[in-house]
Image (cartoon, rainbow, N blue to C red):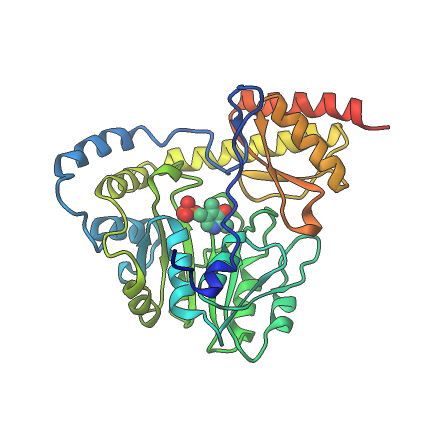
Length: 360
Ligand SMILES: *Cc1c(COP(=O)(O)O)cnc(C)c1O
């Protein structure tokens, strides 16, 4: 059998959440940051109608979708590229702009896919310290090396849930070497839009890409639609390495319909925030601290790796799957998606019995 190229053979497979329950009981996933609401009602009809043309390839330029995104966010449609999820855009950015002498830099607890994308491009992956699990513009600037090619920053972050203000990101850009590509991943941007002025215009300021997705606030993770604003010179190169027919006609139709119901998306964000903060208070009452979150998930601090493992196993055996953390210095944490009410209640109940049994 042919061996893979050295840098690929050396990579660990990307670790998605293990969603298996135990004892044949189907587990409720609170592990993938999916929305607890179905997509808005208009998407169902739109998807059915799009099937009529499913014998044809989709619009490779996402023309209608881009113009709707542009109108919604007040940006130039020509700056937008769409991806099969923002994961595709992250992977293609790394493929085009990172490599052996173009290292990728990210905060300490960066989104794990940034590392995979860097490694697949044969790029070194460097990290900068955070303070209180929050990215720091100054720490990133200090960690820049002569061969740094790209900085990837998720804001709000995943798995941390924390965010830095938009002004800090603008300051990072203006202090960063001009030849370094800055990628700002706003997968949870809709949950934080009320906190800050949007950054989507930063594509116009030079070497900066801002990414968004329909997977989280719009509840369309299964449709795989991401997008971003790109400077023209970056977009040209990324397009060369994208799948030329990357977003299915069905998914483009779903995303367009989702954009037509802004109220539904905003209600999702408001309900999520309310439920998230209520959940954090219930956890605090059990003695479980969470990081402050601007997303649809919470990072629970179980104080030690052993307690995190024990809580995770207890939750799993009761039918609730949380996301354990691989990074050595987050192994005392579990990430909990703000899922359906019943699933959250079950998880809290399980943690309550667990704290009673486990706490000396
Ligand atoms: C969920 C997530 C993504 C992936 O989004 P898709 O559009 O579904 O590919 C990207 N970045 C971060 C930080 C995420 O949490």
